[in-house]
Image 1 (cartoon, rainbow, N blue to C red):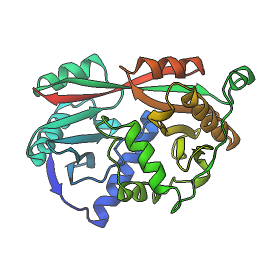
Image 2: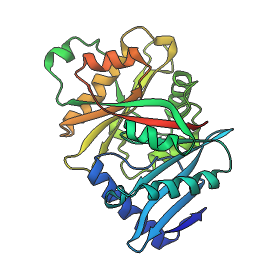
Image 3: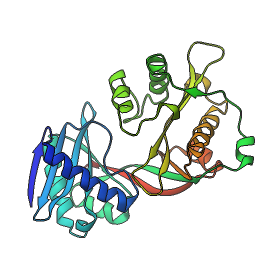
Length: 288
């Protein structure tokens, strides 16, 4: 095996990585790598070409996050993951958080041999669309509109960062973070819904949706949903979720998903009341 560590990718490497991610996405029906901008890429090649890759992302001041993808045809070979993660941890140069999609007990055991222990579970829940009329009728009405970029940016950031103040990935966004995401090929401003506060100049909250068009059939996502803490306890989280799901259904999407912390029992119960069911668990592992 040949491992290469890059702070930027050559054109040929980008092409090979995109093909690898496409193969994994088709097999897993799951986004293979984080959208966060990597500080470092780690590429693992065999005689078959690029078979695995990892990204090292700054997750916080004292820790790096590692996300990785392995070609479905190579996953039976445990040495591929071991060599990839060993190289990625070395490239990180400090404490790491390693994310595993669709984690299983066998992943727990395998990463424990590398000195990595379970840290957090993020659950992916899915629901069929359109929602039943009874679910919509039981939801408090809320006026929403599409975001107006350039006008709503600061108000959205304020609500997002207040709502996710302690969250290691979603909190502390900047304008640069927001603008980087809206430049994504999948971005559609019509599906980025905000709820203006009728009694003030800010926002009650927002529901940002995403359509994964690179899987078949296309899959909708409640990508980021936030309610300003000043408006908690008023049912707006349910209202915003329903608004996002109705927008996705109107776009022809028949299945939608979202992520939430397994420990957020309030959110899990809310989504279950709308018809969401557990699909799988993504898990992070930390250095011991």
